[in-house]
Image (cartoon, rainbow, N blue to C red; front, side, top):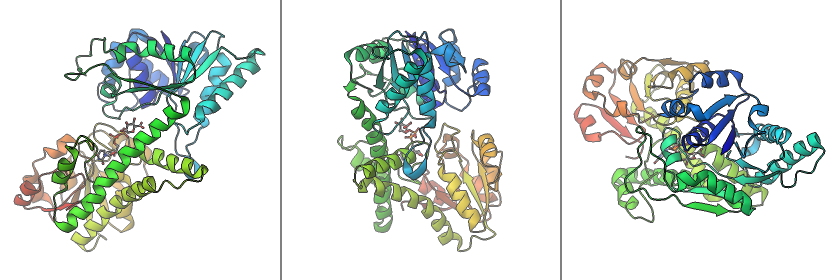
Amino acid sequence: MNVSIIGTGYVGLTTGTCLAFLGHQVTCVDADEQKVQALQAGKIPFFEPHLAELVDDVKANLTFTTQYADAIPQAQVVFIAVGTPPGHNGAPDLKYLEAAARGIGQYLAGEFVVVVNKSTVPIGSSNWVESIVRDAYEKRTGKKANGVFAMASNPEFLREGSAIFDSLYADRVVVGSDHQRTREVMYSLYRPLLEQTFKPPSYVPRPDRMGAIPLISADLASAELIKYAANAFLALKISYINEIGQLAEKVGADITQVARGIGLDARIGMRFLQAGIGWGGSCFGKDTAALVATAAEYGLDAPIVKAAREMNRRQRERVVEKLLDELKILKGRTVGLLGLAFKPDTDDLREAPALDIARKLIERGARVKAHDPVAMERFLEQYPDLDVTLCATPEAVAQDTDAVVLVTEWQQYRDLDWKSIKCTMRTPVLLDGRNVLDRGVLTRAGFRYVGLAG
Ligand code: UGA
């Protein structure tokens, strides 16, 4: 099929590339000329494992442009995958969504097109987007837009750092729409994915025993709510294990054992029970805020989601409190942060805990050094005013520091030679912000091991 994607961020570019991989002819549109030029030259504007390889493999099916005129008239399906950054009072800012809807309406050729919203949008936005596309089309052509297009909502569940795996081997595909014809188009589009009939890329193999992917066909509002409800649930699962972690610390229990002990109950599940600093990134914070804002519009309070947000905020404060407990005075001390990105395998710094922790430490008069395997360049670009000394290696971060905090659990930090690192530190305090290091090994190496949950 002929598919166009508006927006080449994580979601848009991954979706476009995966659809091209499934054999569709895909045109990606982005207003940013530099970004489009880079993509045309095969350069990916962010770090995402295997995406560059896949883009290269499917280049015959994938084109990039800044012009709606090159993308919309021939398309059978148009995806909107633009950013919806945080706006006022927790509600996301929809200006890019509005611009995309107008652009699509202005260039629809008149043949039936499915306009699919993939951006995470407040409930009811599909109706709103429909009215903008309709107005733009009718204004340009002077004709009624009936039968020219229909809306679908197709929320995205991929995680940064494993975007291609999550797209090709999704747990489910959710399609919201109010028309049978739209559902049929979406089914044809996703058929090779749903039935897993494609030959997997060698670098992202299909998991063993992978069956067909379930398609959830819902109405528009339900599909939109599924996205928020999923992210909020995952966010509160993390906050829940962090709440239990605080209690584990008081009673002398081991949160890793507790998480395993409850996670093996299939009704609870093992995933997203990793206690630690808590969540960051562009989704959980924004989406839980948006859910609370939507609930408020309808006179509801959403106390559980609010509590999950509060717990997440507290975890970051606790890092600084724990360092204060250990070092007694932070003024004039040097603290090393291992990891800047909000999680491993990405260079994304949006709502990254490291930023908050660095700010809080600097406010209290500490000096902060940091390392990240991929996010340091982006850090310099985006936070030039944050007074953090970047180091080329994790060993250099630890040198002459009073404490080291593991903020992002990159594999390379788990494998460090901690024993020799300890010898270069001023005081061997190690705060394991992700609960991934071996307390026994570190204690034996002479560290004062501090966890966030015991
Ligand atoms: C999240 C969801 O997992 C995706 O399903 C969704 O599509 C995406 O948001 C989105 O809405 O676009 P993402 O933010 O990329 O994906 O990353 P996650 O892997 O979910 O991690 C989020 C944060 O939670 C990270 O800071 C991670 O360190 C933290 N986390 C995760 C924990 O603290 N504990 C855990 O057990 C798991």
